[in-house]
Every structure is written in C-alpha cells, then in structure tokens.
Image 1: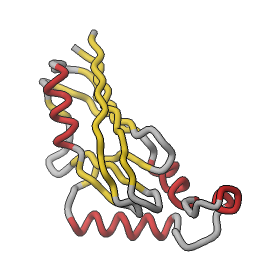
Image 2: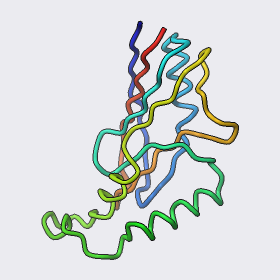
Image 3: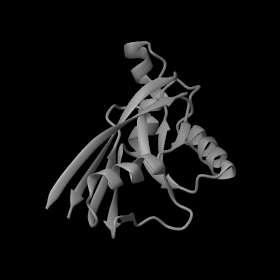
Length: 139
C-alpha cells in the first residue's frame, strides 16, 4: 500500500465560481505512480466544496441558480452579525455541498461517468487563492 499527496493551487472568483479540476487530479495521479486505489480530493477551509458534475455551461448556470435558491446570498446570516464579513451564505453552501470527494482509481483511471468531471466550487464573497489537496491511497 502506498500513499501520495499533492496540493494544487487555484485562483477563484468567488460567488459560486465553478472550476473543472479533473485535469489537475489526473496529472497528480500520473505523478503518483499508483494504479489502483482511492483518490480523495479535499478543500481545506470552510467556504468551498468539491463534487462531480457535467461541466457544461447550462448545468453550471443551473447549479449556481439552485444554490442561490437554497442558501440565498441576500438574506441575514448569524455568521455575518458576529464577524461582519458578509459571507455567511458561503459557509452554509459549503456545509451543504461538502469539502471532499473520494473516487475509486482502477487501472490508473478515475472511475468517472462519461460526462462527469471533478469540480471545485468557491462560495466565498471574494476572489481567493485556494489549495486543494489530492490524496491517493493504493498500489
């Protein structure tokens, strides 16, 4: 059993910016030399999430619109009252979407569906520099 970890760096725009990170994850897998196992993609911090979707403009807009309906950015949040940073909505969104994703790796290939890509969603209310941890466990 081997373990390989690497952090990728991203620049985001905030406000539900969705970035396809699949090529980054695949590159890390290639550098790991691991062929079979599990790949975990983890976003440290409390205002981002990792998931899989079809990275297509219509789906991206639909997801952003749905997230806005579920956790609106224009309503009062207790977090904002306490900290005054105006990003209470981003913490709620990240909690609902989750900060990590684990995908089986078989034959050095991610077991993604035909139209699935791995995406990072930045919910914060400003642009940010993010580090996303790719952690691979396997043989």
